[in-house]
Length: 432
Image (cartoon, rainbow, N blue to C red; front, top):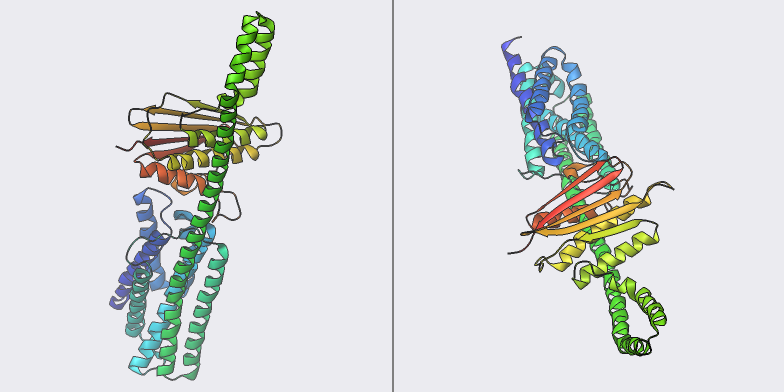
């Protein structure tokens, strides 16, 4: 290896750092082991250097393959997100290299073919293109971790088409310069700069799309919450009306009891009391926590579950005067039970369907434990179940809401699945 070839080392190092930085910031690591990533990228760097020196014709294919393989094996995100990031990085590397070669051709007044034939210019151009790719990565990531959020797949497809359209235009511009046999002109250079700028602009357009998508998801979750609140308050109104009816009839009931007792009609009295209790048992037994809004919500969810053949049990220990916002508690209980009901719905005919909700307070903590029968659960990022719905943007938000609210109160949310049983455990610290 001659001395000039040593420049391959910093080139390969820049290429490796760009790859690691880009995927880390936009996808997030799948594994917690730092040494695993260090081993992979050291191996990538060493093989990149060797190929650049001894088999330079393979380096483009090697880089392209590694972009996709590394993103899919080592990083998080949906398949579409990983394809998008891999494609975007490949485009940035390619456009940066073409722009550098055309800029060198214009600056030094020689045809690109002559540039490529000169080791000094070739290696210098490769180094500058890697610096440019690193600069673009820092630019689009705003120098901080900016993981991609949930976004409809068609946004990715449309922008990937535009991105690779930029790659095609860049390559076409380079072919035109190469076929002419003359140095690149101002037109070629400016057109390549515009193409590079457009490929970078694609990511910022995507970020705007992502903001709109996240806003839509938030709006959809709030609409579902409002629907639940409306159902809850209707249940409260119904329950309050029935309690008023009991209160209104109490005098008549007591008068009848007194009369039958005075006349010593004990058998008739016993039957009458049985009828009164049976009539009002549903109302009298729906006090779970003593907080009307929460009791109404729990009653409504239990009613929905039982109407679908699900055995629903709510166990509440002695609760102090809760200082947690009732609206937040309703969101936590409502989403936890909605998730459990949905899981039971998916079970095959004849399978046991049950939900058990335990609520208790210990010192400054409120503990929630929901257990339900379930099909096998696949967990995604953050330790939460991954939604199996096609529209992942507008589904799978319920437990995310529970997690965020638990953490807001200094608590945690844990989910587990074992032997057909899904368990959700949340702890919430009461306000001071």
